Length: 117
Image (cartoon, rainbow, N blue to C red; front, side, top):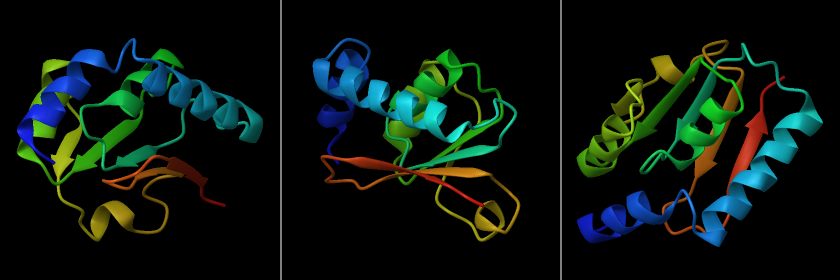
């Protein structure tokens, strides 16, 4: 993704209808599955922290983000998200490491929440 796209997303994600609506859908799904607020959540492809912000607002503290872009991580850090790393390692995907994964396809018009058994 181009730097300008991250800049735009970081600026508008809090109020733009698309991001607001998507967060409402995710929050409803989280409530539906009864995800414990102590659950370890990994947001893969976190971009500028849209899902991280939603999870924080829902009261989740044990949240980690991964992204391949230094620019995306920079925006997350500017928003106060410290648990954001670059890349995906086998350790972060090991069994039991996280109870829930958020996946975001880079060209996506949809993201997915996948609770682990």
